[in-house]
Length: 122
Image (cartoon, rainbow, N blue to C red):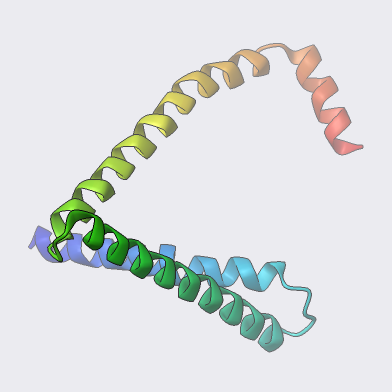
């Protein structure tokens, strides 16, 4: 029962992160005027990006296979993926552990906060 809910959450997050959000981002960044031309331009840009990344990943896998003298590269790719994830989490957690108290410290001074907001307002 919880496995099905987990699968729904996992795959919906996966599709949003790798499909919908990049397309929406590229659509908003395109300089087109109508909705359909923005959407078309965003899809083209996202497709070009993913095609480039797919070619790069394929070349990397072939290079890894030649380096290892073996075509069984899945364990190495899994280890690299886990290493990348762990490094990214530790970097982001380290940044958050420093930035959140700094943000709270800056917000605690009402005079400088008012000055900052006045500057931001223009």
